[in-house]
Image (cartoon, rainbow, N blue to C red; front, side, top):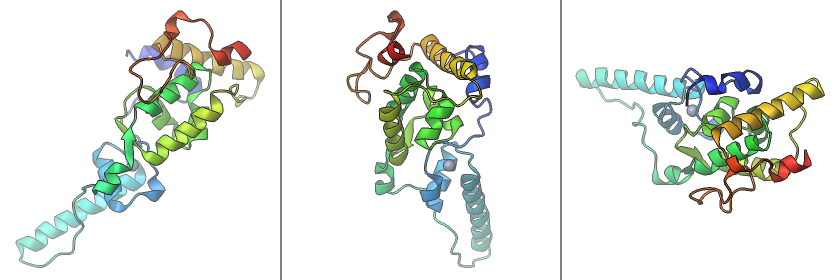
Length: 211
Ligand SMILES: [Zn+2]
């Protein structure tokens, strides 16, 4: 997607990251040091993941030095997910479609991120389909937000009604431009190959009809 297609709405909706140095979705409070290093290796640049990777690299360097001099070392293990940890991750497709659908219904990425307890950048990365998998807890939070928000009107978060309406229109317009389906266009949002309806040919969705 050419960058200029989202530059305008981004200004008011929380800018999509143009710099890849961002945190990936995930519950950073619940991560072990190993998981933080793995997160870092997947591209996450959250402070705690950077710190974990940096500490590991220092320990590794110290261990190499110690090995070179024949000394024993208790340096950290390499970043490998256990099977149980791996099972706690889900494909991001469902989360991506839910965020896209909520934007199609006029919710801004900032509102969606707030309700889902994910960062605004993470919400944007997900919406733009740039994330392969998510922590199960992230998927669950986005799903809960989806179920609440898909039947509600966008919350006023701007100072004035006109500003709020503009943000809603930009979110919806951006989603339409991208060809994203609405919340009620899916039968099984996690597993359908494509939406049951073709959103680009429809002028209104269930939520728009009440707006
Ligand atoms: Zn991280």
